[in-house]
Image 1 (cartoon, rainbow, N blue to C red):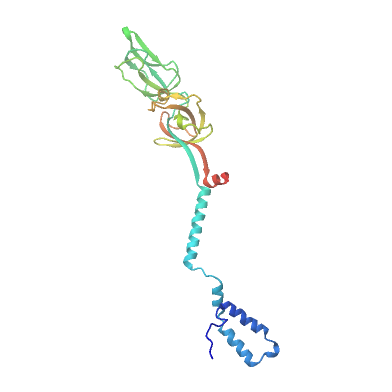
Image 2 (cartoon, rainbow, N blue to C red):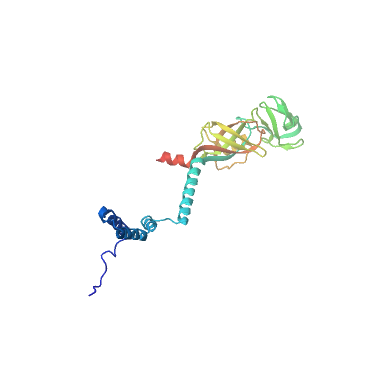
Amino acid sequence: MSISGSSPDSGRRRSDVLDAIFEAVEDQSADESSPTTHLFRAKALAQVDIPKQIDNLLPITSPKIWLAIVGVAGVLAAAIIYAAGTPQVTSVTATGRAVAESGVVTVGTLGELVLNRIEVTEGIEVRQGELLVEGTGAGGATVTLTAPADGTIWQILASPGQVLAGGTSVLTILPPGSDTHVFVPVPQAASGGLQVGQSSQIFGADFAVSGTVSAISETPLPSDRAATLTSLTLNPADTYIYVSISTDEAITPGAQVTIEIIESESTLLRDLVNVG
């Protein structure tokens, strides 16, 4: 009579079968080694597919998955290198003028004046007290304008024959040192992180040099005063902090420049370490 049902060994994994076979082989005593036993042992071992058993026991990762893992690792490595070596810069950008710390010197009329002669030309050096302009004032009196300080004539703003009202600018003078110094009016709202000693980059029409912040005013300047010192057009609604920058190289006196003042420079990795 046949009895239906599953064999007790049918639920074994092939690894269990392999263990059982080897245990059976090891349990054979020396006196049982007959030709039949050897034959059975050889056939049993031949039927055991060891590589397949190992494959079943060790999960195999496909080449596509390995490529994906390598790709992710490469991206992470590149991100770490970028974070470690790329600086994160905080800076303030403003417009400035290549002029000494005292600012542009403006020579203007005190009262109404008919301009007769201009004794100087742009680019020449003058000494304090030197005659610059001669004209005729009220009642036909001769009026002269002299240099209030040493420097270089920068701009001549009027022409002989003109009738000038009182307070009209006639010419401007750049004081000595205007080729190695930059005056930068920075809006007060943007000046909170500025400090003496910070590095800067100075960009002109035909040059780019580096510099260092050498002085920062404590008292804000109204826009009209800052504009007078720099001959720049500024927002009348703002107040400005006077920033003095010493350049590492000589630049064109009087040039209008763009200034980038570096407030801080760090790397993302350093910031993360500091936070931790």
